[in-house]
Image (cartoon, rainbow, N blue to C red; front, side, top):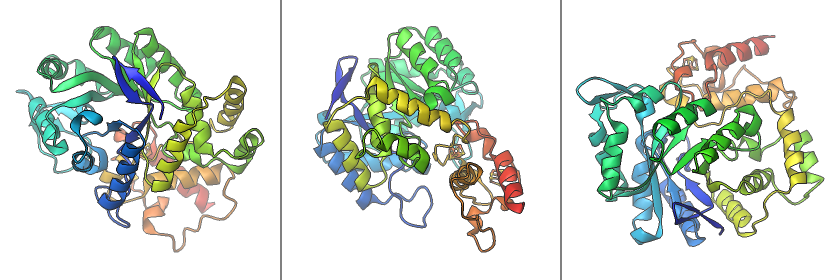
Length: 390
Ligand code: SF4
Ligand code: SF4
C-alpha cells in the first residue's frame, strides 16, 4: 500500500468509501449486506488501508452504524475514521435548532451538538480522526458561515477537546466558492475533499478546484475518482484507445493511476461495492505506477469524447425522495448510452420494470434540488421519454 500524509498523519493513498456498500438484493438503499460489506472492510484493513470515510446521510443514515460495527474489532489507533456534518441538508429553524430539508422524510430536527454526538454514538467512537463539513456549495455556504448556527466554532471547540483530530470539508461547489470559504476560514482547515477524476478535470472544472486548494496550502482528498463506476465501464471505442497502450489494464486502473500522479492528493476514496473491486484496487495501489505524461494525453482524449454525457455519479441521493420510486441513476445511464449511440438495442418501454420507465416521472422536482451534480433530472426524464416515444 502507498501512503501519503495530512498534517503529519500517515494515511493510505487508497481510502475506503462507505457510500456504495453492498446492499441486500431488492432492498432499499439502507439495507446494507453486513456480511459482504464486512468482507470488504476486512480485506481493506488486512492490506494496509487505514482511512475509512462515511457521512451522516450515506445509505439513508445506516453507513455510520455499519462502519462503527465493522471497525470495532480492530485496535482504535490502527485506523482513521472520517465522517461529515450534514449542514448541506439543513436549514436554521431558529434557537440553534436545525431542520433537515434534504428529502429524508421523518428525520428529526436537531442541534449541531445533537447531530455530532449522535454520530459519535452511531460510529461507536469517542473521537473522529477526520471530520468534514459535508458539501460546501453555493447553497450551503451561507449555512456554514452563519454565526448564529455556529457550526464551525462548535467543531473547533470539539477539536480543542480532542473529539475531532483533523478538520476539513467536502465540496461540490465552484472553485470560487471553495476559495471564498477557505479565505474566510484561513488556517482552520487541513484538507478538502473534492470530486476529482480525469473527466471532471475539465467537465466540472476540477483542475481549478485542485489549484485553489493547493494555493491555500492544503491537501486534497478525492471522491468519485471513478465517477460512481462510470469510468470503469468506458464505451468500447474509448477503451480500445487505452488498450492499445496498456493491453492488460482495466478502465478503473487507468482512472486510479491518473489520480496517483497528482502530488497534493493524500487519499483517493473508492466506494467499493464488491470484493472483486477491492482486490483490483488494492493491487493498483500495491503496484504503484502513476500515469505518465503520454498516458495523461490518452485519457484527455477519452475525456473529450465524453464531455457531452449527463454527469451522474450514481450517488443515489435523489432516489430516496422520488414518489414514483424511479431508479434515476440507472435511467440516466441508459439515457447516456442511448443518446451516445452506445446501446444499439432498443430500450424496451413495453414490459420494462416500472422503476426504469422515464415516462412515469411526474416532474415533481423532488430530486433536482438535492443532486450534488446539479443535474436537471426532470428535464432529462422528459427528454428521454420523448426520445423513446419517437
Ligand atoms: S421529478 Fe420525476 S424523477 Fe424526480 S423525484 Fe419527481 S417523479 Fe421522481
Ligand atoms: S442524478 Fe444526481 S443525485 Fe441522482 S444519482 Fe445521479 S448524481 Fe446522484
